Amino acid sequence: MTKAQLRKVYIQRRNQLSQAEYNDFNRALLVQFQQLDLSGVGCIHLFLPIHQRKEPNTFLIRNWLEETHPHVLRVIPKANFANNTMLNYADDADLELATNAFGIPEPVTGNLIDVSQIDLMLVPLLAFDIKGYRVGYGKGFYDRFMSQCRPNTKFTGLSFFDAVERIDDINEFDRKIHNCITPKGLVSLA
Image (cartoon, rainbow, N blue to C red; front, side, top):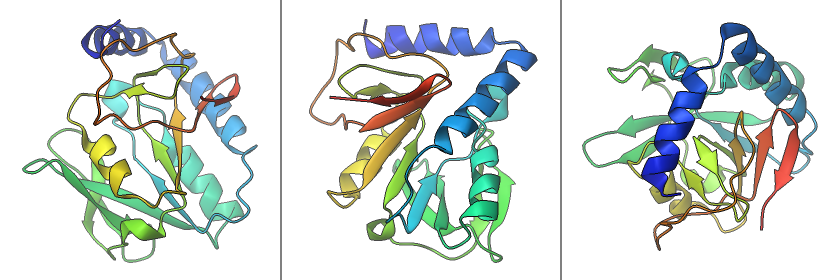
């Protein structure tokens, strides 16, 4: 299937989740995230969810990290829709969040963090394949951003659903994730 086809299918699959299923999947993602070895990770980039799109609730992961790994710097992105880029802000006492016109909670003020500090990035997606390619909403924000990261930055997707066999229309701008957390466990990708 193409990205556009997968996007349509997986948006519909998310929309069909009951609130109870959505809550259960989010709790299971948190449990699976808690199994990650975070030794050597000093900075984690995590997107914040668009709740009306039933994206994985990364606020649960954010809260758990704050409680159990306070030494790990959490960074939150802010999208610039004029040029499809992102800035990163420290998730600290100076961070102020607001929901933008697209329903994305994002920083309005705070301390900027350079992309070179990121050790682990949680990457949003609608679907992913067994080779590590992903389908997002189609703007390319994360593919561009991932290409700016250090070569040893780890990219971990979050998905309510299992991998598909193949995304048919991959191109040279698509960046792979290294693994993906699903409610069933951590999937290592080729």
